[in-house]
Amino acid sequence: MTYCLGGVFILSAVTKAVSLPVFADEMRLYLDIYFGGWLRDSGLFLAGMVCLAELLIGIACLVPALRCQANVAAFLALTFFVWLTGDNYFCPSPLGRIESCGCFGELIHFTPLASFIKSLVLWCMAATNLFYEIHFSSYA
Image 1 (cartoon, rainbow, N blue to C red):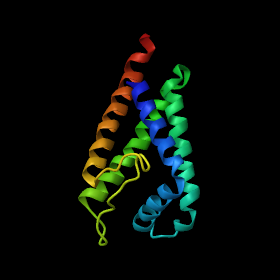
Image 2: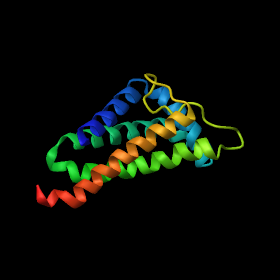
Image 3: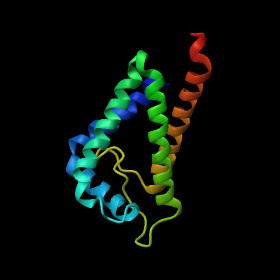
Image 4: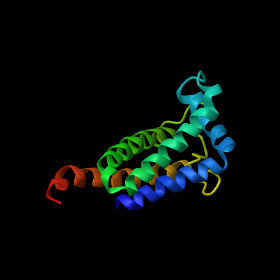
């Protein structure tokens, strides 16, 4: 299951990077709502950093020697994404919900509910991987 999660992280990073300015615009919406807009000018830089972080997590998931660190990083990243997509869906800002999460760039568009469900499913995969890594890796 770690390979599958790694593939999703790599696919997400690459599809966002292909249309980085579009992803940066999506990210600016979140920055405006959740961080009061003071990070708005850093949108393109932060979008690039998100792509890089996802790519590194995805690659680390594919390397057996880095699997433990990758599982922790994936779990933490997905915990943040579950919170962000859940908050967007269940507690929209006064301006309304952000309608496109930019999760896979321009390749796949999710509704706010679908984005939350996707994040939750991936979080469950990451939690399962982390649980397995913590409890059973010493026996392998």
